[in-house]
Image 1 (tube, helix red, strand yellow):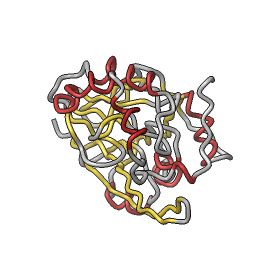
Image 2 (cartoon, rainbow, N blue to C red; image 1 turned 135 degrees about the horizontal axis):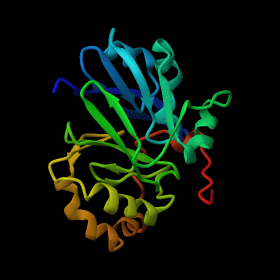
Image 3 (tube, rainbow, N blue to C red; image 1 turned 90 degrees about the horizontal axis):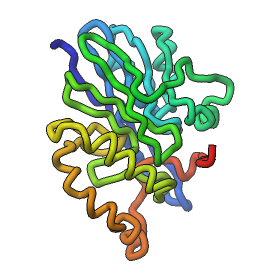
Image 4 (cartoon, rainbow, N blue to C red; image 1 turned 180 degrees about the vertical axis):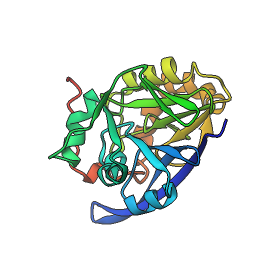
Length: 236
């Protein structure tokens, strides 16, 4: 197997309640020396394209339609006329960043993308957004979880859980059924593994996540969604 995974960290400043916060995002590049797929292209297309180099970009896949997952999608895809993939239920979110365009592919659960000698399987993992997905590669023993699952647990949107029960169902049924050795590669922060995170699941189910919200001020956001004007319609 020649395919490998590369990480590009992009950063920027967002202003929240008159205070500037540094925001960092992971963009993941999967492929070999000839071709790649770019996952969650954040705000700095030049940095991402520099990491890609002269390899052909086959597709740009956005695990969520949020601004910090799609912010560089158009520029990155345009270089090689690559297709852009977003789940159908996150198309409206996509349009809040790119109001004059639509993604090329509407992803569906269990869809497959191929690059080099590996496949990426689409796992529908709604919760943070209605169309959130994760991408699992058995060959690479890795799952790209976007904002669904981070090293410290389920990811939030603007410091809150928009649909926590749906998110926990996604994590329990789609992610924690993967092998324990599977690397968890999120859109924010450091990587973990299914084996490291799965033992905490019962605690999350028992209400520890929402209990923490009542006893302490929420930490600084790890993304800029609160100030982006993102509006979610979870009933759609």
